[in-house]
Length: 151
Image (cartoon, rainbow, N blue to C red; front, side):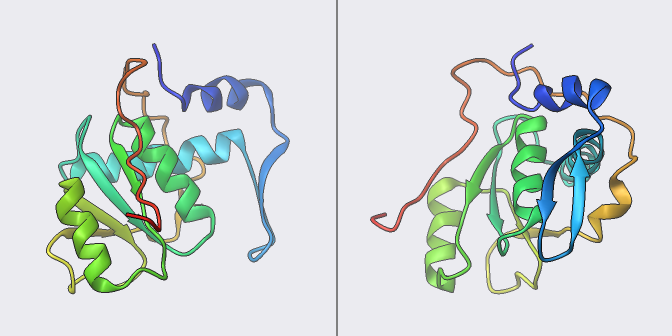
């Protein structure tokens, strides 16, 4: 199986040391914590109809939710479309339309946009969630669609 997130499966079995530290929250996450969080986010995305190859915008401030959203999307074989909080509403709407995104992951009301949204609740309660099997992907499957300031 080819899926970038399977490194977490391997490390969750043998490493209990922190691999990510959120300075703002003074919170440490080990591989098992992250695997549980991305598994639960992935399940929620699947429940919202997201499937392999679907494009999903990430519109969050810098923090654990941003990284874990990336990993959850990759876990289920979806395509991450990262955006920046400084983008204006018309820019975000352009990315939605141009990328053919099916959902936006955000932490605030997304009524300004013509797309369904998923707001991640307190993800720390997901650290012990059952593991979601990684989607089988190929070397040439798209995993990220990156827009730049020149776009």
